[in-house]
Length: 176
Image (cartoon, rainbow, N blue to C red):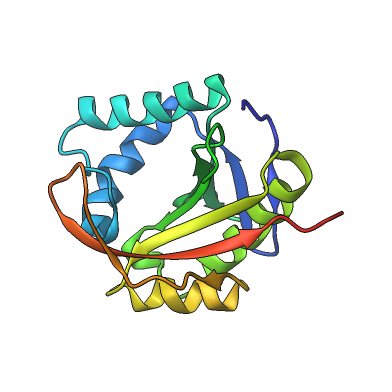
């Protein structure tokens, strides 16, 4: 789903990804990829391809991503979005560059994104999955009102070759 929307919060501006964001992916993804399922880019070409793939998924209607910026300075902070909109398990994602973590940006960005998603996306339940050792993400999902899955953490081999022990939190779409 292509979107032209800009979301504003007290401190943040969420805007559609652009190809020029690939430099941020290259600069910041490697420092936070220990908990991510994707392979962090190691060169400009890989970063360009990753962002183009995200944008291609949007054009096909299977995902939506927003770049997160500081509203005042326009400094890049991270990315929030959802993929697998064509499946029963759409999955929300968010990554924040390391030097911007623990400042409430993820909560603020995900809250704005979910409010937007509840109005504009067709889904019944959205999921968030993350490695069990990512305690900050567990706390964030609980603070956001996610419902923890009953199952034990599931070891999942990622495309990066890492094995993550995945926990799932669900977010049923509210009836508006």
